[in-house]
Length: 214
Image 1 (cartoon, rainbow, N blue to C red):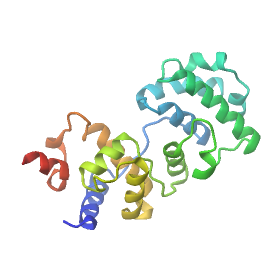
Image 2 (cartoon, rainbow, N blue to C red; image 1 turned 90 degrees about the vertical axis):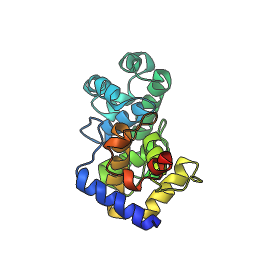
Image 3 (cartoon, helix red, strand yellow; image 1 turned 135 degrees about the vertical axis):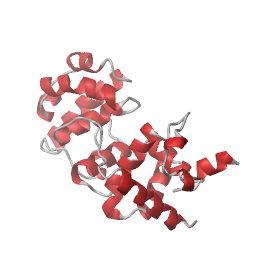
Image 4 (tube, helix red, strand yellow; image 1 turned 45 degrees about the vertical axis):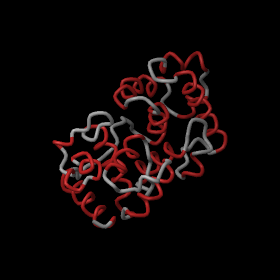
């Protein structure tokens, strides 16, 4: 099977079986999504969604968040992983958005990664979800699933290398949706330790499954 045939098969499967694929983070606007994605690093979306409503209520805008301090914000975040750093990052992010971007969340990867707490993965999530830009955020799920399915070579050893391979082979109009396909498949089917191969409609073409059978 050629790589193109493999991509065609995977894309066709997801278009038929997961026509609606969206982030599971709760948000109403770009500011709320950016806060949620920063908090979601090495933390479950479920935990983040339990935490953010109180943050959004207390700090409804990036301006209000920029005016707070560590002691005021930390209690809202203490149940999240790495609360100290994330508290500092949120305040730093908000302050920079107000001072350098006129209080508007920037919507390019290059601008977003200038903000505290925002790396390439976070910037890709925000721009693809809000703007449907053809950006591919590679988290642990995308990294694992794309390799197991054989969409990227095993030699692609970094998130950036995986991102470039996926962008190169997925039609631009589908990249923002494919990001969620791979995340959700990894979250609920292609689990890290105990993948549910028997429930997976991709097993026939899956490199990991076919190697495991040998």
